[in-house]
Image (tube, rainbow, N blue to C red; front, side, top):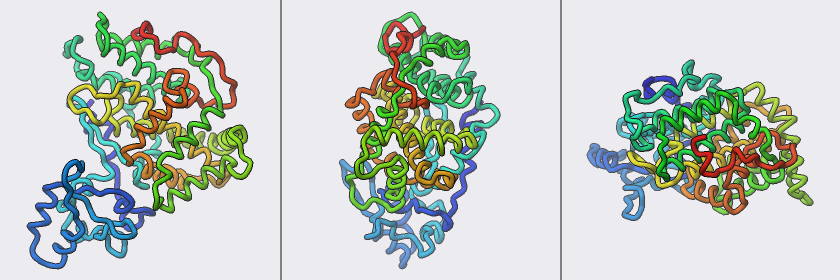
Length: 430
């Protein structure tokens, strides 16, 4: 299967809402301008448009990661927006004149060892609608992705050479293997990451294709299910870390009103207020989940799966987007911790917002929550490092912690973790 043109190319269906969009992608953050675009602007015919464009661009010097950026106005919006909220450059010069970031957003193209994939940034409302509310996001072949990989590849090639097969297995665990509840599918991904890290770091006779085939067989047989059924859950532990994750970056000034409304709905929906305790907030969280969020999820069962699929593609999971043709500097488990923290935050905020709106909780509330939260958290370079550090500080950066963070049955009391699902090296290829 050609991932660039096959089932994973859902991003090709994206259409910008233009002036009808409830938010704008031209405000609230840094908009880079690449060198080729700036050169093109400099070659425009002399006139008011050229002067306006060049006046809006600020050159940057190292160590800035950007060649140049748009100089936002006092409202933190791009000065090249028209009164109707459309881009003046696009309107008068066409999309070929746009800076690369403006041209591609909200699309994120990624390559892993020759496999090209495109995800969508969920900081765009229309991208949220497309990703979260498409019933069959990966298409009819989404459950068959485990067959990807070059059958002629030498089994002793390094881990990164098997990127296509690894990514296919991860996506199958999320979207093609619904015999497990979603939190258990995520926990299986953590186990796979642990075993990949062990294989990469050790001198073992096992090869990557052997590990992947053995792991897929274990999942298909249900051999790991009894141990996962005994994993612990705690609504207070889950609520505590979700609250702390939601508090990251809140110290920044000029928070957008959309995001402020989202945070207020979340905290109100779990019962925050004078005299609230972690126990009372956890009880409110449980009630909102059971009474309002779960019924909505039953009507849209693909919602959280699709969020995960898009996040996996966008962040080049489990290799990380910092790596191009070599193994990522972070481990696969560290990449999983970032994914799990972001997932727990997004699910937790949706639960709280559902508790706020109750029976009126709708698709548009989901779009508002996911879009505004994604714009605030996911585009900030400090979010994932801070989220990983938070898991370490709260004792959730291990197998047991992942279960507590992800468990959907938050009303159960914590129970001991079964030995079969620990991070011990001997389980690396079992």
